[in-house]
Length: 85
Image 1 (cartoon, rainbow, N blue to C red):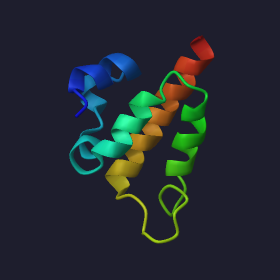
Image 2 (cartoon, rainbow, N blue to C red):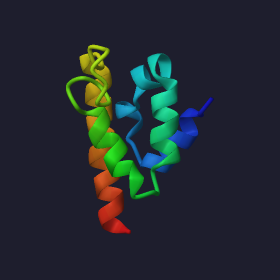
Image 3 (cartoon, one colour):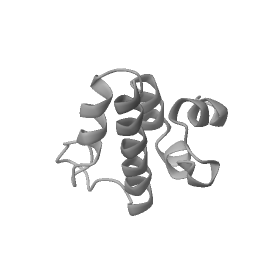
Image 4 (cartoon, rainbow, N blue to C red):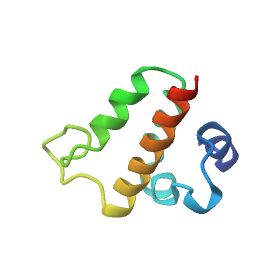
């Protein structure tokens, strides 16, 4: 299981914007985001998650609004981190 400290350190996320729902309900998604954070593959993964059907899968309804907003925020942080490197 991924630690809060690892997520905050990796993403440079403000603690007030910590992706709590992802950690609680979708820990595998949060783990993969962190695993791909320094990879160019992270962009495609995050973009795929933000599709309305939730990860490009048509067999589910997608993410709840809070989780979707957390992913969107992480995508903004990812894009910023990639532009700075």
